[in-house]
Length: 612
Image (cartoon, rainbow, N blue to C red; front, side, top):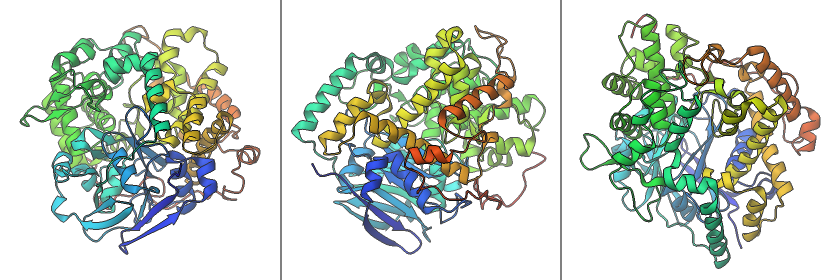
């Protein structure tokens, strides 16, 4: 079976479009998705490039089996993050991935550089791409923009991307789905790229692929992950995290939320406007009426009630869903936004702000979310850069934990030490999807050794690097081993055995580390956030904290297992073993120019010190 082996290259400055072959060795060694994105960015970006400059590379990529895999289809956006300055890969589902794959035909994706003079959209159909004016779309939110493309699928930015919020998302299906964390939407905004539009249908599957899909769906339905996913999707994580005492509550001060019953899975079922929707691609079917917007609906996932509910001390599901709907329409990351508001509340309580904010205040949270997305007030503008930027302006560096500039997401690692290691070593900043040992460790921590924690984190990071190079559904990936991934690749004529795929995962993870090292990242950026050294209050993990010395020893063991030196740089022997010796730069210069790691936003022309 033929497979996609070309790439569309777009320069928005010169308004040129070209199709070029992807090196065959890259397809073999990096597969697609995350792997190809990492290879292109490492090849094409010089160290220190400002993420907000026209020189930054923005890739929209599908996997070799997008449109064929069971589960929700995905596409990936790869770029240099304006929030963290790291390599960024961010994933989204819904209708866009399949239609993008079908529209691209024999292309694996689109690589965008430059900056348009005026707002534009990239329109893909029958393997061809055109640059079209989007001036009339500028200023519209994600839902309004999507409504303009009723005959196509669109991945677009909203007001947050246009304003350059460092954690703006790329939204599709009216804001139901987002390439969320890390600020890829801000990169689109800086390039004046309002939308990528796919006008084709999803690719058709051969009989062999259809049979394989049917078998995989049956396996998934019988798997523990599949059964959990079918009944509750990610919303049940609220109940799980609360039960084991790792639910981040009131700005990461507590591990258990008294109001969890009001925002968990049963509350979602009660609030859902239509529990059963056969064929609906939204997992679980939890569509909630969006307050104040006619018959529109929002689709909260687990992170919404965790960050906008427990994190803000709000215990009413309707209020949480409304806040999530605001984030969806403005196209801003729910996790970073919720943490930003939580930081502001805690800063207010400590007297660092002139503004009075409190936990449990839905109206105050709603106002601040709008201010962040539009950068319309000094406080909103500071928070638009992330919690570390706000802390640099007002103080309060230890209020909300973050890694590499990205606020922590769904689980408090003070109840699961391996999760702290997973957050600290995550390649794009704090991420719970790179490795998620908390689900095992939180209920069996006493029997885990240092070696166990390191091995679980490394193994999950490598395996997920493979799955994200395939661009498979996360939840499908939880139940699919590398043997079945190899079977899928063989069905399209891509021969890879499980051992070879395991090396792909380690190769991709190591290449991304090389990218970050070249940008000046080292052991200090894998450090334990100070907020996690403060004991938790209440719940089964009352008084628990992460010991800095013990964490340093854990990080040492992780680097040793990875084949990295004590500063976190892959050794020459590791590069040789993974076939990266000829890829890696001989030197990795540390950038000294402002904006080399995190973007120097051209909108930030004045200081916000002294008030809000």
